[in-house]
Image (cartoon, rainbow, N blue to C red; front, side, top):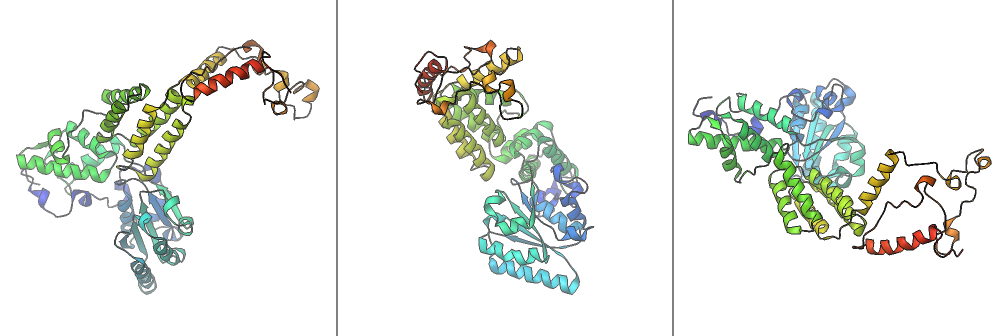
Length: 445
């Protein structure tokens, strides 16, 4: 490559295509699938006749290597490679691919790898058309999907395939990918160089997506070359990605500051501030699963039983993000954020369990009262276990006067509900229950 960067335009193929790995050894990330002897490695090697006919479904976010792995399996095992997309292929195309694969096998002994991109978009009829070829070994099917196959792939096809889950690339994976693309003759060939701030900016913007990282690198390189610069800077990356790069390092102070402000805004019942910090994390490329986890924690810790539905909303948002990915995942995250911010707040359950744990660690436990001990095993009754136990369902109110805590803790109250939201009703009911269980209230049976 010349210093003026002319090699950037020496081919019409995008950088992401030029840098596509030629073997599984060059694949970055997905280490859990690349161990020696794993189904994917065995399939790519072509050493096992049994493995050669094994079909796989690759499930993962965009830019995690699904197409790359499919092409590598075909090329490294000397198989014929055919690619179909649900956007353009119909049942007729699927059947034609199957017929051709059968002919290639019978006439030339050539095995075919059929790669189906976005299989979740295939209709049931299209997927049904795949079954004969997969079941009889005419093709080795490698299907890619960004959606949960349990909901998008027909059961007969799913049962005949290995389901392999791909993970977003971590920062170290993306750094390795960028370094390789900068130095490799197929990539930038060393010029322009990439400074550390620019690399961090691209990693942040890519958010685990290898294709996005390489596309941003290529555009940034062209921006630098146009200016006559010998090094790609963060400003070039910002210009190439067409957005301002937030000061947000997922491993640095800003990461913790923003998530802290996010949770405190929810706790403080300010939905506008909470949505602002949510937007900052989304734009900065924060892992949406991290955001969803923090929402679940907030629902349990800060809202609790003041609104028992809050945790369900947070869990639903987390599951939805997992199923649909980004950018659509921003919507359920926003809904959960606003719901939690506007919900009544109580940390009573959180305080209750922490106080109970503290007592146990301090040795304040004591033996389980005899009448509560298990009386079902041989010899238990001779020890008096269960004797005197009162069955609450036999009482008119479903509550009886009875000791439940160990002797050293009788009278100890851990859970103190607040008169807020749903806990207002819990508070009044618990007061009545405690009067009965302690023998201070009505004892009708």
